[in-house]
Amino acid sequence: MILTTQGLVLHTTKYGETSIIAKVFTRELGLCSYIIKGIRSSSGRTKQNLMQPLSHLEMTVYNNPKKQLQYIKEMRPASHYNNIQSDGIKMALLFFMDEVLYKSLKEEELNTQLFDYVVDVLNLLDNTENGSQDASREMSSFPISFLINTAHHLGIAPMDNYSQREPLFNLKEGRFQAVPSAYSAATNPNADYFLDEPASSNFHSCLHSTLNNSQMPPLTQKQRSTTLSNLLEYYHVHLTDFRNFTSHEVLHAVLR
Image (cartoon, rainbow, N blue to C red):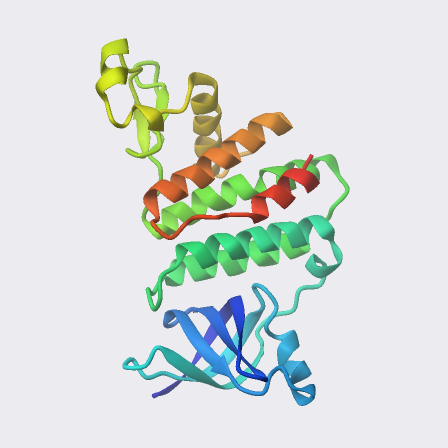
């Protein structure tokens, strides 16, 4: 069957002498693996430029549900980024998004709403003007809000039920819970998944702001870094293949 779909390039692997296997998050089919022959030859350089992380493509593809590797009949840019590739911070954020998606998505699991959300975020990122204080604050909070929104689209959204009675976030349960007693903490196998009170409070503030589309709380660089690390650990707990995450280390360096 031949169909037309949009796609976001997530990852490429060399295959043979001149070919690659590309993991592409498509709007109509979910995550698919495509073999692209001859792309690493001297005549394939134009196609190579289309295989950059999170390149947004319009593709005509062959789709055979019985095969793991599919083929691309035609492809061209669906949109062009004007500012991302010339901005170091935006590129770091793009690589972060790419790694989150690559390690979260499963083969051929359709998620049209997530696809549309990512395209909107990429366009917003591309059009955000750097330099102002508001833009710097937005950039610094971007990874946190992206993880929270993406978790919602993946069906693993943390519950924001924070209260005085339940002030500690439990990474495994995905919700805020009461402070465990000394006895229950010693016997509860989930005790190690509790964030402490300051970390839980910041976690709640970021959840609340993101879910209500309001301005992020004015966290310090250390607080943002801790919240980001806690969200990545949350993904690791809830997604079995989400491990060995590395791009956030670059973010910690550029988002100061």
